[in-house]
Structures are given as C-alpha cells and as structure tokens.
Length: 102
Figure 1 (tube, rainbow, N blue to C red):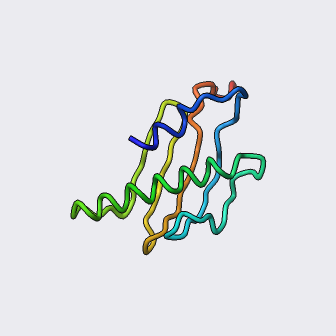
Figure 2: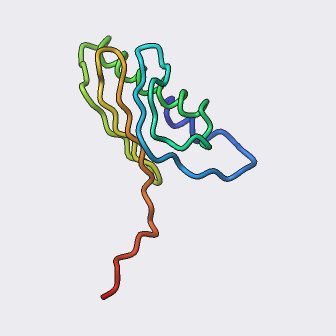
C-alpha cells in the first residue's frame, strides 16, 4: 500500500509526527493547513496524494467512500472526501500519555 511507503523511507534525522489538519484540492495541492510550517511540505503533499488515490480507487471499484480512517502504531489519519478533494486530519498516537495524579 502506498501510504505505508511514506513512512518507511530512510531518513537520517528523527522527525516529529504531524499534528493538525489540511484541506486538499482534487489535484493534491494543499489549500489550507494547520500543521506546523516546520514539517516538510513534501511529506504532507505525499500524504494528501495517497489519500486522494484511495478515494479514486474506491470510486473506480464502485465502492465510493465518503471518509476513511487509517490507524498506524504512531499516527492516525482520518480523511473526508469533498467533491474530489479531501479534508485530512493528522494526529499522533502517543503511548506515553499518562493520567493526571490526584
């Protein structure tokens, strides 16, 4: 699956996972985003392209999706289709969240 390839590329530096949302047009261009500007825009475009590809492939298979949710060990991607484009939510899953002590 193409989405898995996005995070398996070898990189020398450790990066934080993206947090926020983005609106994507039908061509994969990012219209608006709340993801920090320090996060690589190319990786955001790659995520957007893969999400749009999933929606297109589902439509071609006559199984149109209105939204999808992908859960990885450390990242959750939730996307909603919008007339060819999409609204994509990105949120890291943190195993280190602790409950507040009383």
